[in-house]
Image (cartoon, rainbow, N blue to C red; front, side, top):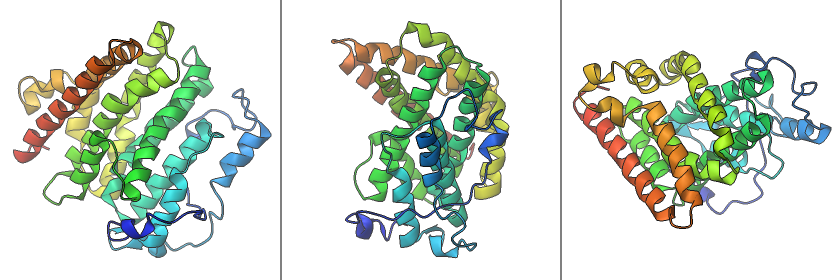
Length: 315
């Protein structure tokens, strides 16, 4: 992939080429989106299908890959998938993430570690929306689209040889290194999304204290699908992240397994709580710089813990 990125930076008007779907979204949601209470319009349904254009174009995966990385054609297709529009909805967002994960997996490209996990997370949130497991489903739909859009924006930047955020830049840097464990890389990606992207996304969708319960319900739902993406990481990337991810999401035994103070630093719900609080700071005229400092410090502190665990062979 990396040897064709610069060449592709000037490309415009890229043609979309479809990807086969590894996960059927309807296994995560209770009803067909075209007839669900979600109320998708015909235009929205058609747009979701646009992302699947020519999905049966070629049964061979070889044209997408250049060794263990994406080929030039693969990068072109990936860029098309990152080009979001103002027509996005929760289903088109899922389609993009799923096809990105599938394309990276076809080449065993390590940049796909994160979307391999993220599609499970996105699908579970859609299931929660469809089942009305949360109160404000309109708010939840907005945050699915905005939150994923921040990942897609940073992926597009790095594919075009531009500068992503410092947090996403660290993930792609680590994923490319042979001397860094892939477990460390994928957790860094999760932390990048949760510490940096999430508070800004909460602000963008106009979250209020009334959304706090829904916010933490959605966080708790992630625990139940952790085994699913742990299994995918093993299958597609030969990466056994079970111990640290179970600790990250469920946590009480982490200090004993990985050392004192690891839980307080590396805890999913702790990070989500900080992101909720930083959302409030970002909304204050005087609080933006405090939030930015807190986000920056938290990300690099967690990265440091993961780096130590990696260097000592614990992950």
